[in-house]
Each structure stands twice: as C-alpha cells, then as structure tokens.
Length: 235
Image (cartoon, rainbow, N blue to C red):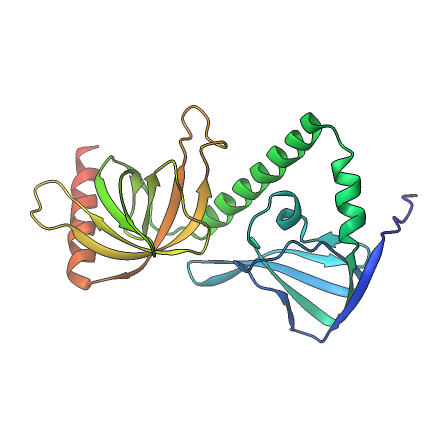
C-alpha cells in the first residue's frame, strides 16, 4: 500500500464550489496540496474549456509555475468545499537547491517538455481546421515592437510562426500575413496557444509559437480559405 506523503504546509486556504484558485495565464509559483475536497484543472482552447484532470485529496498542483518559472498554464477551480495547503516556499527552495546543477537542469527540461506536450495536445484536440505546411512571410506585433517572421504551417483558424523569441501563452498579437500574388497583407488578431523556445527546439521542431485567430475580417478570411483550397488541389 502506498504511504501518504506529509508536506510542509505554510498556510491553508479554503474555497467554495466553483471558486477559482488560480487562472490560466496569471503569474504565480506557489505549489498547492489538496487537504480536502477536489480541484479541476482546465485549459481554454479556441475559447472552449478543456478539462485536463480532476485532482483529489493528497494530490499536488501548481508545480509547473515553480519549476518552469512560467505563467500558470491552466486554471485550477475548486469542486465542492475545498481546502488546499500552500507548501512552504522556503522548504521547497532549500530542497530544490540541494540538487546538483545537472539534475536540476534535467528536472527543468522534463517540466518544460511536459508543458509543451500538454499545450500541443490540447490544441490538437480542439483543432477543427487542418493545417497545411507552407512558408509565408509575415510581420507580427506585440505590445512593444514589430517582428518579421515566417510561417511553418497555416490553417483557416491559426498558424505556426517560426521565431526564436516566441511570446507567452495567452499573449495577444496582431499579424500581417502576406499571401502570394496579393498586394496587401491579411490583417489578423491572434492569441498564442502554445510556444516552443529556442532551448526546447529540436531537429524538425523549430522554436516558435502556435497562434489561433481571434479576429479576422470576412474578406480576409474568405481570401485565406480560397488560398488554402488552391493549395490542397495542388497537393
């Protein structure tokens, strides 16, 4: 029989049914353990909630924020009356820092790889428009600057942008996508669905980010779909 792990809990928080513990895309790196009740872990994909897991008493969540030093990759919501313990941060850092540099690096790589697999799995689950491998030039803009880049694949609902400086999941951006034979680029507003950093890239899996379209004019959407249909006919 598996023995129950006792965690060093610095504080406790109680939540009523449906109350959010933390929101996807928010900052935070506390790790929690469920003392009573249950917690739903979910992600938003193309505006729809995708439930990843239902965690029960004794299970831990929030570890990606601590180990991967990233924004929250999912939303945690209480199911029924739920009490969670915040695991002592000083204790965690002390234990973590006692690991060798090489082993810490391995743990961080595994954590980031799991995050990437989770993001891509959710995106694939909800993706309705097939993506076509195609290199197109584009310009994207975040809140601070413009960047020139290229696509890796394109669909009527989103695309992959090859870049060594991907934005963070949930970030909003505007792109100008240049189609062959078109004098004016398509102007599309997007949201980052998943990202792969330069450190995470591998042969055949370049750094970049998958984005979903959040706003595109009827005209530009029609032009893009016509272009994609013409490519399919040539394949």
